[in-house]
Image 1 (cartoon, rainbow, N blue to C red):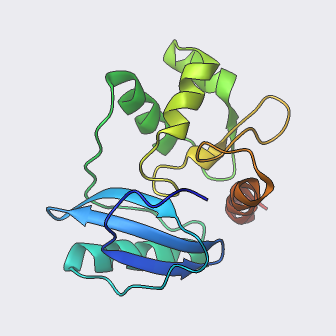
Image 2 (cartoon, one colour):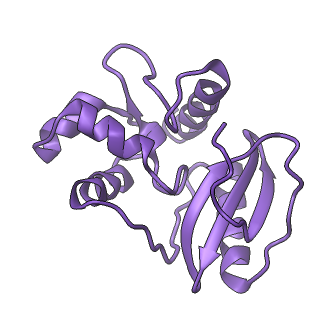
Length: 161
């Protein structure tokens, strides 16, 4: 699980555990997986309500699309990787190496950008896998974190069954 890094404007319970969102100036700036003991928190503003609505739609239907105002900071390389992540079709994961070749980068640099992704699920870093196996997720390779990545990939594969 990720450590709490944001002041959350909502915390919701999802099929993969507690999930926090952070909205500033009517733009989504962060999402993160939280420890199970984190209390749920109702959205504090209209944008947070919309983020929660779209996340609930996604968890009910993996074909649901995210259309949210995003504001994320990162290096130009990370911005390119994060943009490329949003273009990976649901149910069709790609390897770190394949994405790196597409971007003219290295697999480790792509992995670093995935690890630094401030918007997991919304910017689908879970769709990038190792050449042999899942790879990491949100900067971790522990069983609990990888079970979230597995669940998300299986959830999205439903649309391509």
